[in-house]
Image (cartoon, rainbow, N blue to C red; front, side, top):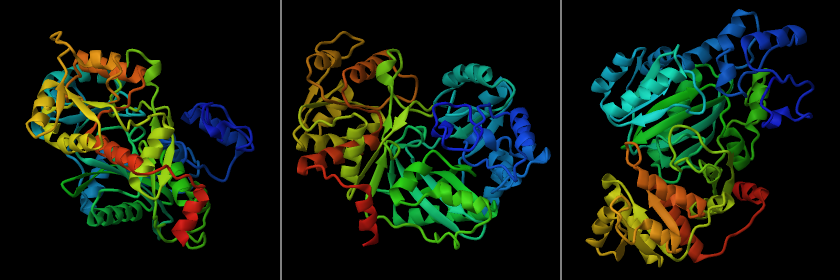
Length: 484
């Protein structure tokens, strides 16, 4: 095992016969290869970094076990990957690359705003941003060039308000089995390590789910995947788009494995060593009659309360530092359990504060109505407040912070009159007073929701909590339920 990250379980002393605490560079890996002289090397369990060593290692005479370096290169190279998807008849968001500042500023004229901009060869979504106008793009480009001066900047058309879906699958070259299809609670644009996920999907149409499965199999077979595969999709107006393909284990594999009761990493290793899925007796997708939720399924745990100057809104750059799982027979209770496990206590009484973008007013209305039906009072900023009042909801208006109107939201928070906050950030850089609201909410332990989809899920969970008690079961009982 080669791993220089002390925070991972793979550096435990009893995980491997020998642990090399070295960085994953070509030189270091080759030095270890010469010393150990192994039959082959597994790249699939280390994220993106080892995948980028596939071609250099192969050229140095190292045998790569599992998916071939050539297939890995196709998935990692944007131009080759686009050719593959066109050949398979699969859609992806329009995209272009820029190598100069001026070139980057011209691209949105073809794609139109908003666009997702990122430097190439960075991990965890670092320095990635959704930009909505030319001024924001200019500001990003200055930082992006600093973050990755020797590589082009990648610019994709951003699918606003799309649902994002993660798929983990296992393939032996002849058979491909879906491990799990996870629907994100948050809209596309929130990093998959931060977003809440639901397994199985809770709102996608059956036809869309089947199309996702078929697209996954097409990609797996065309790349001749031997082992694990992760694909990230976006679904907008029931049309599926492939965002990226990772010919490796993803961060969601432990979650999927625990939820379905199948050790996917163990099976993938056997496949890379020459077994097939038929020999391993895993040839059909596991059908679930329960739901598992991670704040991206395994509710993500955020450290915002430890950093006073960090805005608590989620985006393409990963910010979470841990995860939990909530499992139950219903999606609503599974989501409620995940929130509870992540330290977020959903209020069953009190007041909810609502401040959303103009385009989200009509979407938040049914949420606000349901919250009021549950017995919660509504406090809102003037725009959303007037919108909700005109539709028959009782709303208290909070004054604007920037205009020193009283009482404002900070007054309500300090008087312990707000117990839940729904605040969707504007596409452009968040205004200072909105950042202040989110920051104070985090430090006072007030549940904070920053997307409409999460607001809907939270409302369903609160309604379920009001209806009954939380049921506690051993995870093996859920496995038995599945098989009964």
